[in-house]
Image 1 (cartoon, rainbow, N blue to C red):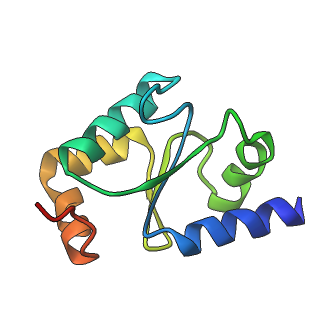
Image 2 (image 1 turned 45 degrees about the horizontal axis):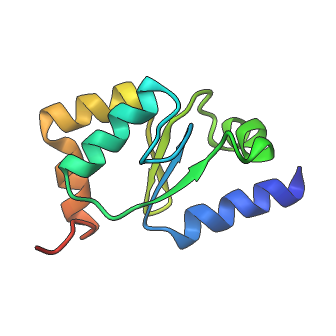
Length: 109
């Protein structure tokens, strides 16, 4: 467990935008992960992903670490923004784009 928590902390620290999801961006394995991927694509965000279906220890221990029970989980600059419903709401209100602009993570055209 300690190794997995250390790995999670390292992933969150090293990646400006990190999505823990089920499946991959090209082939999401759940509708919630798919929705968040589409939002990130729409916002033109560079991000790293971790497929929790391929990483069972991360799938098991990330909810304990983050105090968030479900996937996907979107992390920006070390901070958990939330899961699908929160990301969709933030996208719809424009708040998500503000966060991305604040941390300068939008792709350059």
